[in-house]
Image 1 (tube, rainbow, N blue to C red):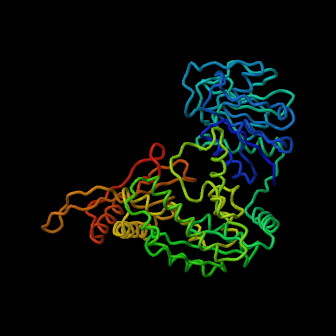
Image 2 (cartoon, rainbow, N blue to C red):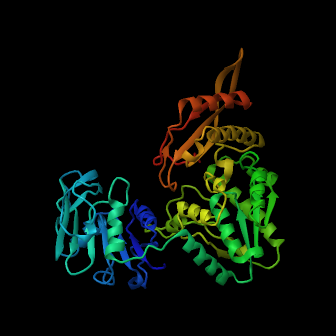
Image 3 (cartoon, helix red, strand yellow):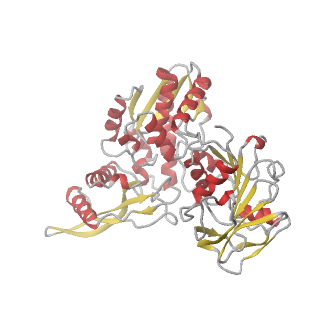
Length: 509
């Protein structure tokens, strides 16, 4: 399965989406920066060039050497990639005189071309570029046009090189998945063997070879990633896996006990460590979001290190790192500007002296869930919403106190339980409540109140990269609002967050 498809990243916001679409075809792929082409590129069965925010006409535009790929490995160039092949190989790229962004339809498709097999004229595609290809490169053969874009797709005669000026990976390109399948399966001959079952078998064998008889310690969070990582490791090394679940005092209501109960039936060796007081003491008086995150990360490592030292001869630390984290760390522009830090990103402090094992590092979130289902993990656990590592600390704006944590836990519990009772939980990707540093005037009975405001947040997404707010029913929101205000002392106003990502992030801090 290795070295099936290479995706060269030119900095497009859609690059991860290309990889996700390829994986949906049960084909393994990897993303590498355009300026770090693997030495063994000839072992890949196909190569895809991504789009880019750059113009090929700019002096600082990405300019990779494709001599080891062109004519030797089947190549599909998307958007910037298509313009790159034209601009530097005898064609002409100029600024577009008409708007080429958004939906378009293929008005002409060349007959009997494998790339467009089973795709008909008028098929909708998604354009996103300010430059356009005016003249095809040497030996270029036009394959498709739209009303405004003459050279919407072309191939290079004499080699398996194809180029398109639209984005097949986005939902708006209705036959985009078919086009990718045509290129990868029918043209490149890539086998569709990237399945959850195959991944489990391959990973278990690799873990056994890497770890041997050594012991591994894993920090469980109760979330999907760490749980699937734990079960994979358990299949590989059994009793040599030691799991630690740390209560940082910032979990959801009753979550520490309920998660431990869930793990009891899974055969895992799990130790629960209640360090609530230690975390809350360290957070006292801290209100800056980044300072709170770093404090939680530092204390987590201290607690985890204390517990790991109680175990003898542990050689490895397991982490639930997934592929988006890996891609971010090797992106074209290097790690992105710090939006937020997290305690399990960035490696281990030197004093821990453990080797890292990351069984999920090549999987996207939806693939992690499918692998978990393949191993028989409870669907309820696999369907859990993502929850931030720092917990409720970043959903309490401002400083943290035990009373604020209590209030937010109660609000959050009412909201999440309400989603489950109304059969809405599985329709939402992530939901939670935020305690605002704002008091508002209210009236309860005949008395004036001056109490806290809470915001409810529910979003739909596939991987958290982008997200839209969920249009929850008004009668549901009315019911939840009334319940919160009536039952949670200290709250007299509830608002609903209708911001999408971007520009807003999913969490408020």
